[in-house]
Image (tube, helix red, strand yellow):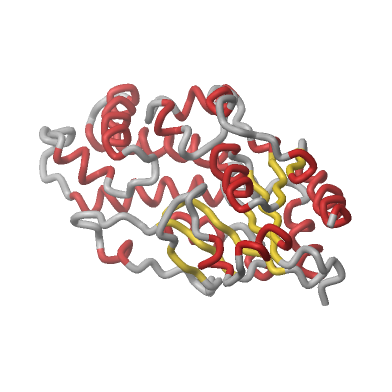
Length: 294
């Protein structure tokens, strides 16, 4: 039973709120780049530059058509008997292996999510990650039993995608899933939560790292927010991920020190309705201090 009747729903962001996207993505992209370089007989730097052209054109680091795009740009033209499907599988295998090794929820987050669940409060994830990537991350997170549903962006339609990636089997992972029509902060919460705007303002708390997305969504609905400030990326990781995509692209995936100033011109007068979590251990205290505000 919900013992905190003024909170019915907690909306979690995923990347850089539940786990650090940069901590697994940076070494995963580096490992994939090294693999691609070896197959193409090129240097790491040449391969990274070609990846940057591709991801810049797609305006996201989450486009799964990398190998097809590199081939279309002539990157593999000198490779004899080039087997596109084999290379896609190898690149995906390397990326996934690093993700499995490096993806860990922040210390204390699992216990926090479990505690909220035990209080009878509904928890959902709303992420701008594409469906296939979001589901793969959640599969390895160990938190799905306490989450009611995950809402993601659709996976892009990729030409020549091997059959195994079109409808990926994710073992026993069966967390309820829906695809969003709009990224945060334009997500229609009334539709996905089946609550009125008034109920959302009164009963919902949004937890996320990105001021321009998660906290702006809270602001748009007048609901309460917890800014996961601990999710701001380390400058070294920011510099390393920008080997593969420019800042305008990487900023879509993470809140970094370099893009915080972009928020200064936007209204941020949340007052007591927005709190800042400097570490994951702050979240429970903040959540129930928010609850006490009524």
